Length: 491
Image (cartoon, rainbow, N blue to C red; front, side):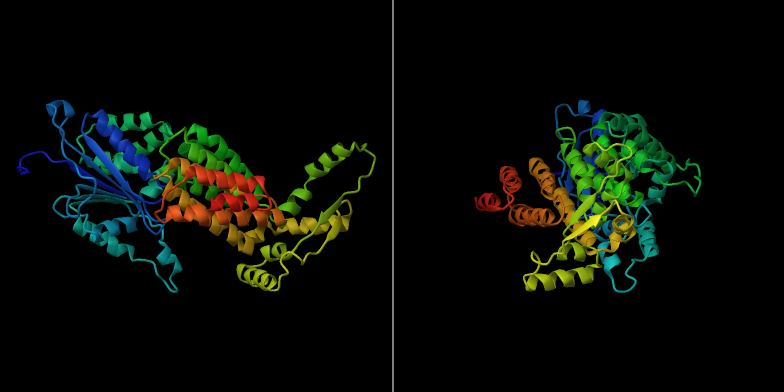
């Protein structure tokens, strides 16, 4: 087929965004805006590897002629971006712009590059023995040289200053570039139709639009980041917001507000790839189980709960003690090797658990204790242990749990687009992780068996089987000894 030079061709748009930055929602807004403008549109996405080892890329083609004028004809559009064939390239972070330039997607004869100039460091940059940070100035210089029009601003800061999301600001920048033949109202209608934090996203769109058209007002440099409660209202749809609010409250009580913000960051990554199927079912399940998992019961948490004033009031009420009657409270503790190791730094904790395992002492070496917490000395022991909350982030157990949480989240992010039902079942597998001591160890073992047998092969490209995953989870919950789980996995 021969295409004449004066024939209209699709306008090509390539978007690179990190996990949790809402690239999928940005794409949905653009598709909806094009549809409201009666323009033929097509979009595809290519998932990245993880939160910072590869961005998810989204590719759109918009035909600049209204459907009503095509007389029943349909344009032929591509599913994949081609180097040298991009009209608009959007990058949510500076290094993603550099990758697009390096891969040949930014051309000086046609490409408008819209990129945020802030940095989120890649895994290779963080893990380098020395200073592995890429030179941002080189990327900025390349962007200005290689693009026909380079629109470079710190859009993350703009989003923070306006208490909105980065993807909404990017949408405003795209609209302000004028590369798509759509009115501003088409973009606003698209935001309203999606129904996600409409007020905040409209505010972000207006900020990006003003910035692209050179009409933005300077913002105060000392604006505080949005509080978690405000983030929930802005970023999360109503079916998820209630779960997220409970999660923030729980984790702030468990550790601190910084830990609660990490929870929202992680949950935002799942929201970004959730296509609103079944009423945000995946994000709701992750919101629930992620909060429980991040507030796992360690010896610090147990000591904290046992020394709270409301617990003593509850104990007195349960035994029916009168106001002037003394109540003796004896705590039965049986810490083992794993409980002791959980409080040590990762290196020492690994060494201790390895030593005990090699000698067959993991299940045999325990220290049974009875602590009278109605006495000053007994209460002080647990109270001081509870005060080790500040040390928790440096412990062997914390490192273990966070690594497993990240593995779970990466698998969810990768598999949700392939099999939404399987991803929900994987989210619910977090229910296997509960309790303290032997209960915790058994739950972790069951989770790892299920993950390695069913989830990892699917993650590596194999088939997904939601029914088998559900059967394995139910078997693990029904039979603490693990025989039923073994049969389910073998089947």
